[in-house]
Length: 310
Image (cartoon, rainbow, N blue to C red):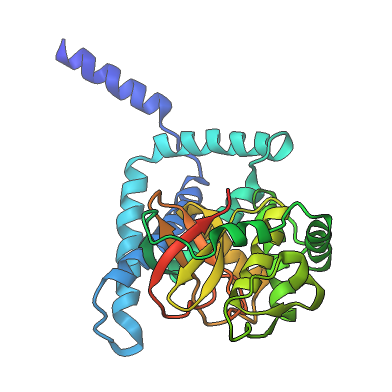
């Protein structure tokens, strides 16, 4: 009885086992796609003995490839069937749906770039901070429904990045980055009167693109919100600056790649992305007037309050 079961199992295994000349090629390609990010993770978290010509890292990569190859060959049949189904789904997505081969390539590329060039997280900002100064005046000054602000923001989106293709899910963020580029390129810092804070409305600042940090933040927040972005203002001891909601850590991977490789290549070269994480795990990217690219360095000051414009 046991013998019959063994024969039956072997028969089923032989029947479904796929052995084609191109099996090894598929398994090897899949191996490399998995091995590269695994190598990056291990490399970043492993002590570097600085061997000659980095031979330790060469040996490490080869070892990872061999281990993954053995695992993939052991699960060959299941993996090949899953790959075939996956390719069918991607083909359907490329022809009819929204997620296809090009989307997979972009996601993998973004993931690889972010893993090798990590953004720089700052402290987690919680909601229970000090009251935001001049809150009511600032909210009233953020005239995002004013046609002049809307028209300015639309103009900026027509001036920058309008030809960027293949990132439909991040179109609004890209357009907000166009607004950031236009404002920060033209902004002229002018101090308030000595008697106290002067809160300029967004339309006032739009006339000459001049003012102090709160004036810049108000104009940036209004323009971003006028085209569908979600801004917020951060208050420190002597400074106010704007941020934009990016989304999750997965969204950060894509945005990091876009900024460093597509939108602000020269400005962000060899530099890090700076952002905050709120209590819900959402990512907020710095848009200060001191930054030449979204996510530029923060001014080093303690955060006292946050004003989110939902």
